[in-house]
Image 1 (cartoon, helix red, strand yellow):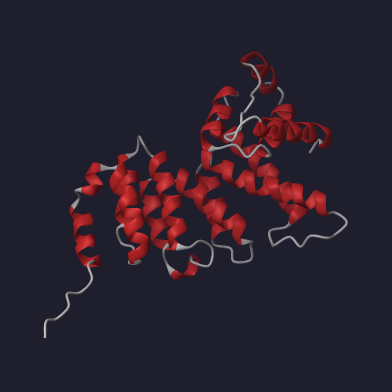
Image 2 (image 1 turned 30 degrees about the horizontal axis):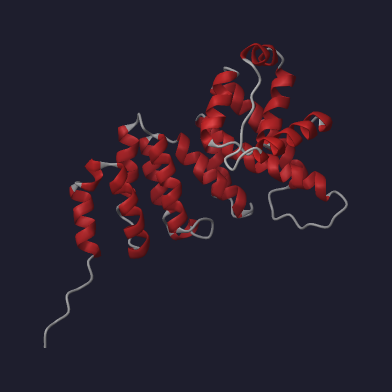
Length: 250
């Protein structure tokens, strides 16, 4: 990683975020992006720099489109960054105070954000890699929870159904609470605008949740997003099941 280039990019990112409460993202011109795209090392450097800008999903998509990055090319560079960063930071909780603390902090940031960016490009290999992170109890939960979001964003309908069934099981609740998982799944639902089967799978799995407080909150949000869900037999059956038992009259 080129320290000077990355340091300058970080300063730029911090400056951009200071312009407004939402932050302003500045990308190169199309001409400059085309020049950068032809240089693999330079392209990798730009990905590293923008990882530290903590972009939202729309900005990551815009970045990918600007540089005309294929899923495979983007995944390859992200996986390289993850391998290099994890070699420095490890996958466990970082304990501050050491002589290499700043280097490790940067590696941790790269690792977390690169995992998040995989949610916009991961293929079969990438999704397997994400699932391996999620199910590895030796890895810190901050990485595992990021991987859950990325996996659900890239999963197809069947993968989504299988994953949510697994994630709502007890063996994953040490990583992400059911309430947080609802929010993550809803993000994947919103992202699956052109995939009705995936949306159907998410709705079906969320309707199975037995936590009354969590269900009420998430059900309200889902019903606002999708009329078919609001009127679906599955939802009506779940609402009926969630009703408190009637008190017996003396």
